Amino acid sequence: MATRELVRAGTTVESLVRALADDIVSGRFAPGVRLDETSLAMRYAVSRTPVREALGRLSAMGLVDRRPNRGAVVATVSDDRLHSMFDAMTELEAICARLSAERMTAAERRHLDDIHQAARRLVHEGAEEAYAVHNTEFHTRLYDGAHNLHIHEVVSMTRSRLAPFRRAQFRISGRLAKSWDEHDAIVTAILRGDGAGAEKAARAHVSTVSDASSEFVHGAQRRFGG
Amino acid sequence: MATRELVRAGTTVESLVRALADDIVSGRFAPGVRLDETSLAMRYAVSRTPVREALGRLSAMGLVDRRPNRGAVVATVSDDRLHSMFDAMTELEAICARLSAERMTAAERRHLDDIHQAARRLVHEGAEEAYAVHNTEFHTRLYDGAHNLHIHEVVSMTRSRLAPFRRAQFRISGRLAKSWDEHDAIVTAILRGDGAGAEKAARAHVSTVSDASSEFVHGAQRRFGG
DNA sequence: CCAGGATAAAGTGTATGCATGAGTTCGTTC
DNA sequence: GAACGAACTCATGCATACACTTTATCCTGG
Image (cartoon, rainbow over all chains, first blue to last red; front, side):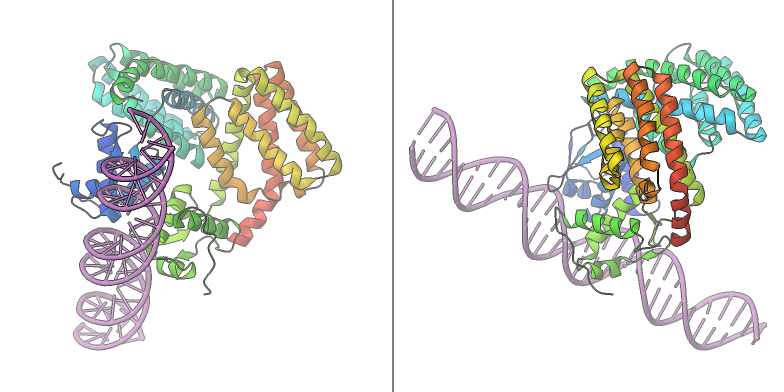
């Protein structure tokens, strides 16, 4: 196997984590594939030590499974587990929306509405890439607005783990406009300070996203063999 | 500093993680204290390699903070963060209770009720230790009952991170009986399949626990200097 | 006396070598 | 011919050595 050039920003370990995570979520390393330390060390032209540490971190992220004395493999996300993560995402987003409605400062509400209104243009233009960026920003605002560090951490982690299974989300035609309308319901409830309404709207939104992702997910499951 | 004997079960790293985690949550290593790899290696009579890996895992657990090239320190749990974790715990338990009410199998409902009824005896006897064990079992049943692997993982992690701040919970007089009554409300709602009721009851229960823990927490904050 | 920089000391990051444990293959025996 | 066992191979776990980063101290110049 050819050695791959490593983008050396920060420590070797950090570079390795980025490179390996990318190789995994992009599907170059399929789930279940053995990650042999020596081979990886050669592949990236580093020693085994940083490889070991990188595998440790990826294991903590849930991207690889490690068993003592038996090496590491790319984590296989079972159908069950994947479903449970989408499910959990719905609950967590719902919480953030409710808490945002209850706790956001005036400035935060204004900012949320601002970026939401500005995104209307992206929908008309059909700018999928740009809308995806906006979407991330929008949800991050909800996580921030909940004013709870721990929930923020948990929901961010869940979101990043699901990322590989959501990439194609906005490719589905008409999804952009629907997404904006759903966001609109959330924003409206938050601006009213209506916690229950925001929770309900968020729940509806994320469920839709889960469904929209499911086709892609099943394709991924077939490809990845989870 | 004297070398400490390591309970060598499993790999060296696992033993180190246990030992260090214990030293941290028990307060022997106060938050903010520098964890110098060389010293720790000498202290436990191992080399730096497993110490580094152990620190990495503890960092992933949130027990230590690590900055590149600048070493590791025992994580300081800010007042803010601690509050947010109790807060998050309330939300997560509420979710589990609701989902349990909606999804538990007949056998699971029966088992939950069984252990709950059996615990009545512990209350009368004032068996704090035994009740604490039962309490853990009770809540674990709720996490299982939600039938969601990811939420189970998240709530378990949160619970374990909060563990050091809850230890004195049942020492507070009358807390045992109150706890049982609160559990009773949750069980009743779950047996009825009343999701909203279970959520509400769980929320009330965990809030009380948070309040009950707060005195201890503030003591801990003073001791630990968070 | 203070500020700035060079230098040394300490500690983390990485490489490499050795030992232990798991997995495999081949031989022997039933 | 199949099954069990022993030896061998190879990857992981740990130790040690080296390199680089950070930081503290000291000296020099203003």
